[in-house]
Length: 193
Length: 114
Image 1 (cartoon, rainbow over the protein chains, first blue to last red):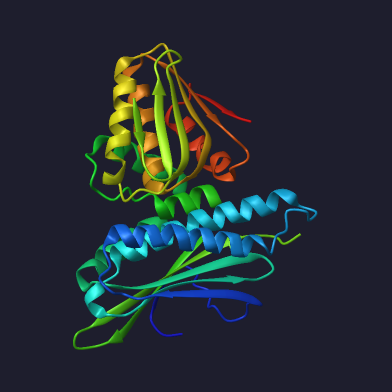
Image 2 (cartoon, one colour):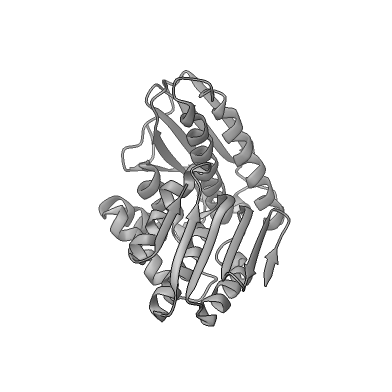
């Protein structure tokens, strides 16, 4: 596999079921993109919910899976839209792959060179520290700050509340000008009844 | 007091000192929550004896919204003037997962998820 990896990045390869959605990188106003996010996250939640029927032996699982997919997909799409490097013209995508023990989300977007190191430092912190302590510390710090800054809670909520595992892959896909794509992987543990 | 948008409605009923949050909250970044945080702050600053935060009709909340709720809880905690009850529902599984974090911020807060 090419690129620089952070965390235990599992390739998309071996899943029986998957769904991929790609988005153009056109300069659509962010408010409009935000609305598209909700529609995509709701759709993904409903789609994956059908694999865990409400009348099965684990009826709560239907609601649990739908709710978790909706939250995680929405957060990942929000991040992709906020941090995508639009001048690159590279499209963004979200895909979900299901195996027996997990649902894996992959979101790919381009990233501005200026943001690379900043983001990689955030990743180092997320992978190295206790997520619960980091989460509470972040909430306390955010309460002291004026709004406008990023809350920085999306990945932490996935780690802390959803027992998700996170990993990233950075790939340089073009030189002159240099374009880097980042793929965020979120692995949500699931046991199919 | 009320703040509402296309997919949500936040109201404050002063007689029962209850904030009710309904719908889906997926606003843009922390700044998207400014109006809601303002309502929360006003309620905290009124310092009622007991504040009830009803979330059992709140279907969805993004992480910026979780941040807005946490700010409210920290403000009430720091003012030491009001008791806080947070009511949620098992129907929306995110509440069972994420609301317990509010209690870590304010251990004396009552969390009722039914």
